[in-house]
Length: 467
Image 1: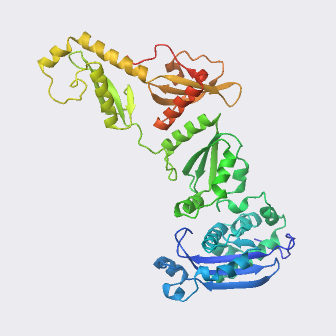
Image 2: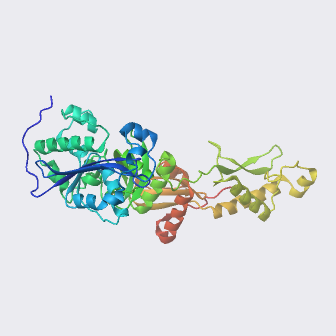
Image 3: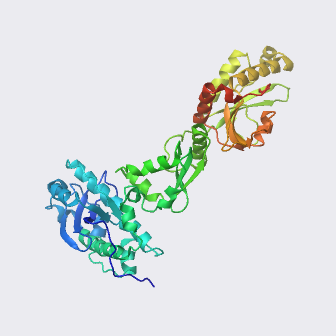
């Protein structure tokens, strides 16, 4: 049974609280308007002033919103616009702590509307959802309706600003009365940061993040990764996502979905950007826009025909078949192969660049198998020189290990940690010890740039070329 104490704990003297609820035309401030607002000024003991009004949002109210709130276009047609009541709202709110259920939603709308009316507004915020989780832990749900049922708070005129705001007033008073551990004062502390966190995210998940380079993962309530990012300082970068909350639909939906954060510490910025890029390709998070270019779909292959001639072809990548070179697009591969064929006088038909039948004249021009195959070997050796194989060898997370990142024939192969004193004799032995990852242009270019700036960290094996 939930027991509610009937005494008030001390809160900072002189604080007043503006307990607010709004109704809107939609879910994000950037493209929607306020249709109703209710403000109750509370001195920590009782309500001392109230203000409520319908607002003409200067846009049509969607049918589903009218069905939920009962507020129609006809009801707001004669109501004041926000600009007409902006000064009154600003005067009520400017010296009080802003309190609301899911506070960032209400705050984003009011701040946006005030800014459009030429009022700059900066105040402390308290979220009754976050306060309820701390002061009344273990409840089944923290929605306003369910909280009121569980805490025996009467709620009338649901989904209207005044009805929901009055219920929030009653909830806030119960929170003040039962805050025996000082959670509210702690949340009001300048260093708290509680007010800017996504509603489903526990502050403890921020506090355990390291101030180190690495990759972080935002997850939704189902545990699915919805965003992957990299950072030189993981904690600082994660916090930056929440400090300046955008008003556009995509940002608002993104923030509301974040329920958990995971991370991986990296050696340095290079390691972090490679891991980030590989993870974006592996997980394909819904809120990552960049680095979603096509995967390398095509490859250059060689095979020997029934006459003993080595033939080259560009085809879709095939699992288990060694690829000599990889391409994002078919056209990219065909252009490269044609240049190689012209440079080394390879038969276009034997490279499948000319689809007409091979004639006796073609065989005569190619010469015998040994002569032609030697030209193919020379072409592939030249290609290997142009598509380098090397490893970047960098420091590990501790003094006993080193990080290896492998480029094979111009493509990123993978990376991993090895013992510091381990001798890697050839590329095949390294490939057995590190984790394969998805290749892309961003990773390759980053590694090329890194070894250009740090040539001492480049490991090259002798005689590693395509033959």
